[in-house]
Figure 1: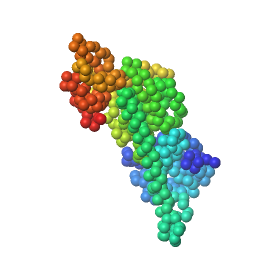
Figure 2: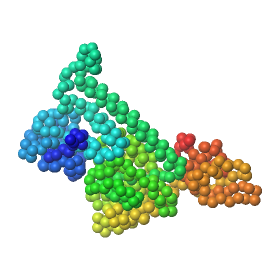
Figure 3: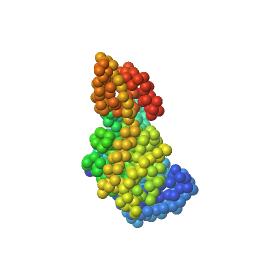
Figure 4: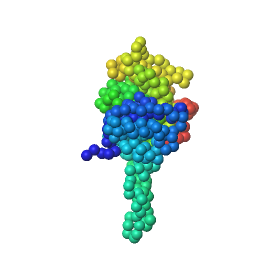
Length: 447
C-alpha cells in the first residue's frame, strides 16, 4: 500500500493564474516540470489572468466551472494550482470541482517527501509538511465537531477533536525540531573538525536541474543520483577532493533551489543549508542553455541571502556550455565585487580543469603567508599546533637555536592558534597579527 504522503497525484488538471505582482508570478513551464516530477499526468492545462485573487476560490466562478468540466471530461483526480492557496480557498475549490486540490507548495512538499532517503532528510520533510498543514487541520476531517468530555477521557472535559489534533501536531513539531537540532549539532561538530584540520568546504548551489549533481559526480567520482528532473537530489552529499595547487577540500552537493522556495522548506532544511552558509566557497552552478538563466541566478541569490550565505565567496559555473552555440569552455577572472566565471560541460568533462584551478585560486586567497620566529626552549606547543594544521612550508634553525617557520594557513586557523596559545603566534610573528586586520571575520568570536 502506497504511503499517502508520497502518493502521486495521478491524472491532473493544472491551473496557472497570471498575476500582475512580481512576487506572485510563477512559471507555467516550471509547474509542468514539478507535476511531471511528482508523477502526475497533466491531462489539461487551464490558464487565466486576474488583477487580484478571488477571496473564495482564487479564480473566478466561471473558471471554477471550467475546471470542474475538465475534471469530469478527463477523469482527473487532482487539480494542481501554480499558486499558494489559503486553506479556505482549497476547501471551497474541492467542494466545487469534486476533486483533490493541491497548491504549488503542497506539490513541492510531495516531491520532497518522495525524494527523501536519509534519516535527516525525512525529518526535514516531515517538519515542513506539518508546519504547512497546521493551518489546514480542518481539511478532510469529518469528526472535528465531536467533543471529548467526562472524567477519564483523553483531553479533558470539553476539548474538541480538532484541539486534540492541533496539540498532537504541535508536540510532533517540537519533537522533530529537537531531533533536527541534535543532527545540526553533530553536523556542526564535523564542520569544526574540518576547520581544525584546515579543510575548507566548497558547497554546490544552483537552480534545480542546472546539472549540479552531474558536475559533482565528475569532480568527485561520486555516484550521486542524476536525472532530468527537478529535485533529483534532495539529501546532501559530502566528498573529499584534492585540488591541484591547493590541497584537500570537502565538496558538498545540496538541494537545488527554485523560484519562491517555500519558507517552510527553508526553515526545515536549516541544518542542511548550514553547510552552504558555513562554506569557504560556493560554486553557483547555472544552466548556460536556459533562456531564463538570469532570473534563475536572481532566485538562487535570494535564497542564499535568506540562509545567511549571501557574503560567501563564489564562482559562477556556467554548465552545459556544449548546448550553447559558439560558447567554448573558458574561465574569466573576477574582481571589483564580480565573481569569477567558468564555462564548463559536466556531460563531456570540458572545462573542469579550469574550474578546479579557479577553486584553488579562490581558496588560496583566504590563506596568509608569513614567517614566525620561536626562541630556543619556547613555543613547543605552538610549533606542534602549526604542524598539526599542515601550515609549515619550511623550517630553519639559527646558530643560537632560534626556529624560523615559513607558514601558510587560513585567517581562521591563525586566529584560533593564537588564541589557544595565549598570543604566542602574534608574538612569534614580531607582534603583528595580519589575521586581526583582515576584516573577514570577528577575531574575538573565534575560540
